[in-house]
Length: 506
Ligand code: KIV
Ligand code: ZN
Image (cartoon, rainbow, N blue to C red; front, side):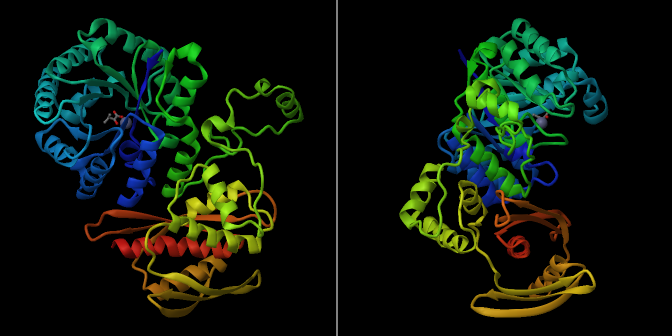
């Protein structure tokens, strides 16, 4: 069986899409998780695009030890210089240069002829090669490019030193048959293509990203570019969890394997959703709440009689544990710690102490604490420093009354109180918080509430996204999380969490 390398671009193609931005600390958490997941390459960002991106590529390059770290660069020397400067501390650095090869992109965007594109590609691969041995060249919009021109570009960049040639379906336009034919053609006709890594990078505009990536693998591609949860421009990129489980579940179809520790997929997905402040769609393949749920009687009966009647992979294989035992207020620190270990969390003593304190508070409100509650606790509690914390709140609301909120927040040992009216209890509470912290102009971009498990005493999980403009007029987004059996408290905690990040960053 062939090994298929997994190139994760969550921190570049994923992070650059609207609503998915992450701060440096969040990017490092994702990169460390990707390392544990055992991806082969982490694309950490686009170093030349902003000082923030440069810093995150550099920090990730200096932190990650067990996989390659890549930075994207346009085919211009300044981009390549920045990519290298950010990457040079990496154990295995990769410069990833790209240039469009489709008639539409060359004519309208680049305003370059085929010959000019060919020459630029060769020159810039050679330029990057002076810095580092591992060079990836991406032919942007490859799947709408002329096949013979793409072959010439592929041959030329391989001769110039490219170790990986990537064939992106940039606009999500292609079909599995076309992808198969293109990879097959290049492997058989582009000199040198069989000796380097040929990659596919598929966008999901027509919902074909997974199918197209796997068609590329069947034709002989040996690197898939993908993102956790399929984050990415427009409809996203190929989801890592789908392509990896596709290959694992159907070795007969692909005759291939990846290095991914699939039992870490679920947690990696939860971490990324949590950081970007989005809920997991319930029917999302592999990781959605319903992905392994069998509701209809016929299905339940089938699975009970023989699991494989309706289950093609086990929840355990992607890191989802079926609830075994619940914990409660009589559970001690030992039992709690043991459960965290079983759930796959490797935490410091200080973290466990903190989570245990929250667990105990939860036990006072909820009789049975399930694995889902514990996972929510661990992923919700923010490790970043907070400026303000909640002391108390008093909210009054009714359908015939104007909602009022009295909020008290603590900061550095002092306590601050404000009252506000609002269009509902959450609005009133948020307005009172804004008064206390002297909030700069901002927008509440998103507010989502979800129950963690079933039943009336379940935990409510709230995610809010605030946005504002920084001093350069750039839009910045800040996600906050809150968890409580009281949804107003969860909403307040989420808002304070996001506001702390906003205040700390501006
Ligand atoms: O979609 C695309 O073409 C890209 C390239 C920069 C690799 O993201
Ligand atoms: Zn892309």
